[in-house]
Length: 338
Image (tube, rainbow, N blue to C red; front, side, top):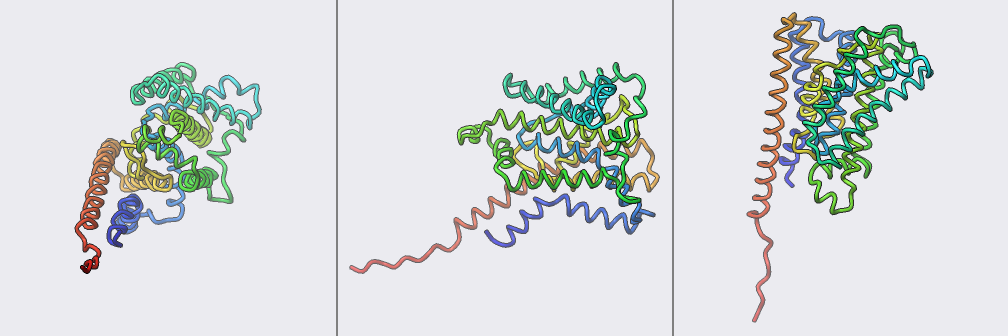
């Protein structure tokens, strides 16, 4: 493969970081107070919740499915854990109960999608509506005064400025990047999403992979719930509301695709940071709240266009490279002497 082709494919594969750098430079030049250290830390801190959801959505998209229930899981998991076990379990076990609740939601979604062949979009949409309704019923008012250990992930700081949530998010992304790039466990997700039938024929238990993807999404969504609850030191029924679309946008910007079999955690981190940076710059520029909402809708539209454009460009580049190989100079063969 030619060097120019490798460069083109690398840029396409890491397009989110190119966009992130360009947008960062633009804001440094034109947005007041954007470049301050406190604001940069604030951007990453505000990104932690949506970052967990972006990674959750990205993992599910890798196996060729969708999960619309993650933003409700964000509120449902901590709400159920604190309501039913808050007076029984220690804060540490309460955290485990929260993560377990998220995993069980993912298990429910994954089993029905694989064993009953349910459409993931419709099934998780129904799960989303049911959980949000249950949260509204169970938590008509916020549950305040959470145990310090339970809210530590969202409120704790290392030193004077660095939030624990930022460190936790970076560690989680590093772990998943290692799993999906360096282990057989992670490669099974991409193989399943790229061609499920071929993956099954090759010996991969594709149902197990899909179920695992949904369980990981549930755990990550409940982790986002721990951060959100800790940040406000309360559990409210509107936590995570309408964040699922931003999770889609971040996952696609980060290299994921509706076609499945694509994406990597480090790219999804870039997608989440880009979303956080856009939101921060709009606030610093004093853009009207309604226009901020409209711009987020436009961002989702752009992400969808980017998904299709990236797929088409990748196809065109590889097509040209294959044609070049077939029409290139052929090796000379020596004529046989009579």
